[in-house]
Length: 166
Image (cartoon, rainbow, N blue to C red):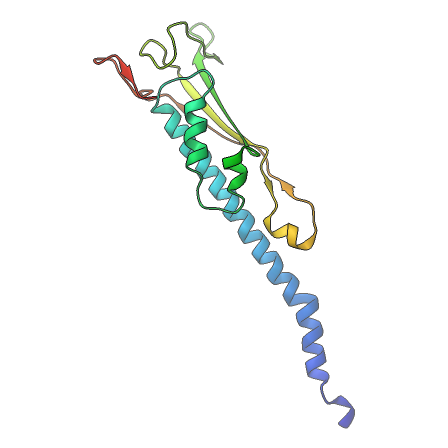
């Protein structure tokens, strides 16, 4: 009996360090990754909602500018503000004959009632999840592209006044 003193403490220490701590680490990692995933999905949708209610600009600069200035509070938000995570905006029109979507172009000028595309796609790509893994010395995890497509609503244009929201 005398030689067993402290055995439970040693067993607990081994179990805690070998099983419980790694499990806690995995739960924290998974929770952070899911939080970031959800934030990027919502961020992409918000950019698409902005794009369908504001005027068409060939470069999508107004949408990208809005998105960079309205990044949600999340881990690595600086990747979105500083441009490491790429934001792309594409406008499409539907071909009358085939019904297929084609790249939108308009000679009437940007931000006018004459140039309203049919759909918009906002894409966020190039984001790498780094936060939790950097403490462990592991490489970052690249996440897949996130994109949202929506039909144009008004493009922020008022046909009666002939003006559009930039």
